[in-house]
Image (cartoon, rainbow, N blue to C red; front, top):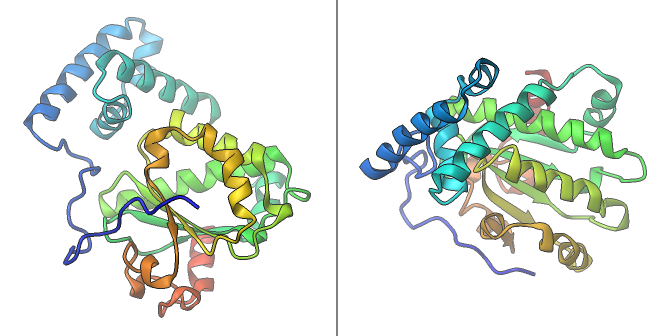
Length: 265
């Protein structure tokens, strides 16, 4: 298993402003943000292109800058790529048969309270996924819907990122969905840059190490640094306040309430 990539500092106040919030970190980044917007408008000379990226927020531009290590040209291309992709692939139809089929499994839900960084939290119960029963297109459509729903929820906390928790208890052969795992990682990097704040892997059985060895070569270094193998509930509570979690994870909340709020919002 991979090592722990860092836990919250002692005395951290829940909701304290994160470096990945909406605003620039400092004056230098504020200047880079302005320069990026000018460069983006110059790059998008056609009316069609401008209409596509004209709605880019400061948050969109900051995420692109950070994802591309402050490389202005690369950030411009990333913003354009992301906006074109969104225009062509979203919104996800919530009522089609593929979506309804996967949603009925209650594989994942939003914890309707933030982590210590103020990010929205998504809990995924991997044992409820079966690759023999869920087609690739169905899993991808559900993943897109969940990410979009989570981003909308995160913005209520004034944040642009979210934390993913994977409860890997019961993980086995039926859950080893390598094509879907690779696709969702690809989407997070290319179409949702800097949206993932942390990825917490809880209750990982020995068999998961084999699956992780297959997936990890496709995970970029920045994402890999945000993955934490959580050894127990005590460590989980270092990232997410115990009082924000359901009873299954040491907290007081009712899991089914959050599940219903996720799918009926």
